[in-house]
Amino acid sequence: MEIKKKGASIDAVPTDEAVFPCPFCGSEDIQLQHTWTAAYWVECGGCGAEVSGESYPGDRSENDHILAAKSAIEAWQKRTHRQVRTVPLKAGR
Image (cartoon, rainbow, N blue to C red):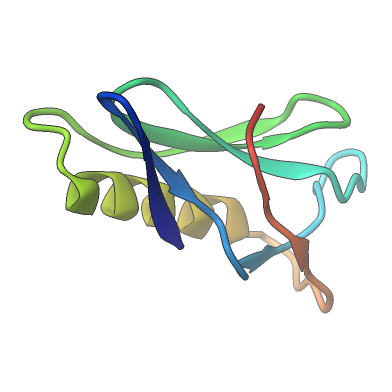
């Protein structure tokens, strides 16, 4: 995970994180999305299923963005059945 800044915007960008495919449609187009605050979610590009992570309001520090992004990834990875393969996590649009 790395931080990219553009003006006042802070983005936590996946570098080598791998996640499970979508449990609903099987798509491997899995993206990390966020608002302008430190609130991230993982979203399936196939069917739109999404899982939110913890939100870190406040000063919107780089660390808050990393924590929020990691919590969204962790939430996506929780499954009721075992998965054996992972796919690359992509940065959102």
